[in-house]
Image (cartoon, rainbow, N blue to C red; front, side, top):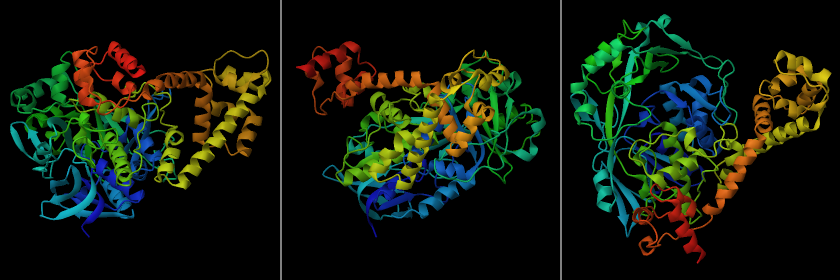
Length: 622
């Protein structure tokens, strides 16, 4: 009973994906959590996806993870963000039922063969001769295993702050995890503190939505998973309102009791998701800030006030929020709070997410300094895959920056480290046109199938989809349209008519024109699309993107090829950089600490200059 291949500690988004991945690949997995009622708990906002995060969820799904499926089954609203921009920026986002999300995750894990559960805390990591041999729990039970994945979230020595009050907790209502940080430090790990926060929760029955701006979901809602999941038939709206100068003045009256401004909070918070007091302090000239009012589920009156994260005294939070339009009579379920917790700088990891200090020990999620469900889930998936491969003496699975946002995420963490909660953005990916949300299945499913994770059924769906996409692209490139065929549509779209026949694909390059319009307007194309089974939104969208952005995509592929040469120039893990006196002192210090695998990775380390890279290339040439 007490012997497993892999023990996963923590059942947040990282831990759940790690357990599912390793189990589905054939490992016997034990998932240990302090509360089995809160698996994959949405501790902050009840949503998945968003800018760049939506791409990550699609990648998790393409690799055979569960996050996309659970999101589709429990979402109450879907929106594709950034439609006004280029396709590299399009990002799916779902609003979810918080309770159903956790229940569905538990259901899926309980139906996953090879996963066992144990409700307890882990207080010690058992190591013999530098390798993992097991864990010890708070109840004094030893579980033997070959590998451990730590996915502790914000629970390591978690400390909750509300004004001048502070108390231990991993999140509101759950106790913190004690002793584990100290055990890891004894092994030789470096730890530090970070801070995150969450907003007020309010009673929707007491809000005046007539004073807010409604934000409905997309008319035709999309999905996250590439497999068949339930269609969203009805949606709940979110709402938009604003703070004001009066609100800001009330909040300022509590600054002297703020744990953030008084120095009681030592950890650094997320730069891109600051608390409301941080916003009005840093952006003092702004008279108002947006607040997004988000429902917590289908059948609850609880609403999440996105944009009003705070650790100010609760009376100040409530007084200020009641001055916001629509909140004049608001009743509150709980105040916002900040939470401080331990994390371990991620430059202590290999690209597989295995630690450099202890063999077969993996870190995933907020323990690595990231923020966000999606970033955590991606790390959990990769840790689960690699822990399974390692104990079977198989090659590690690493995604490059040109293959996935997940590759960008892990490369950034290990190469650059982080001193503030790391959040993914499209701007972090230099090849973002290749890493679109629509083509994650094409990029990743075959790789996952070769690992034994993504099923043959998943791969067959991808092959079938892209046979249709490529057939449609080839057809549009081959047929020519006469002026009489298309000029009526061109006139409707306020774009110049053609004087002689042109290829359909060439005409489609016009920004005013879209492929569904062309299919609806031209009977021959519509009939061909119908006969060839092309009339699916994902087929049409993908074909249109390929045609419209083909030259840009080709240029990005050329850049990938050019820089891939640096990625193939390997550096030894035990190389002593102090011997290369031609390197700058800073470069020697950072190269020795991070131990890059390739010249490409070395070039992305902060403080390593192009001149230092030239020295390394000359040395390798010798």
